[in-house]
Length: 171
Image (cartoon, rainbow, N blue to C red):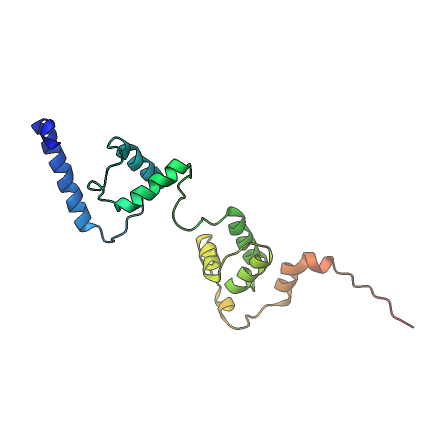
């Protein structure tokens, strides 16, 4: 098939093949994960070869290409790879909890988020807070950090005001 192209095209094909070979030798991992757009592009280009690409596929295995083709023929969209991103609601809630409850640590915030139906581990909460510039204070790192009365009142004023201090004494 290469003979039907002009010598210039043959040279370009050899150059491209050499570049692919060099890049494959330098790629640190054996597994390359194409994005959904890249998968669609490979299928579109493979259609020009009637999807007879067993000898041509260098990025993924031919079986993987056939699986993508079957998914495409069934109308199934390609799913993006990796973990889903954290929602902004989760980030905002974790930051708000950390600011309003100064004695809470990462594990406590993660537990409270779970009660609200927002799932994140303590390490994820730590990363969210550090990205927001909220780092543990030296007092927070101790087992029981000292907290003066005025700071406690200021942090819990809304719940204290809502408390009913009146009680009825039975005779």
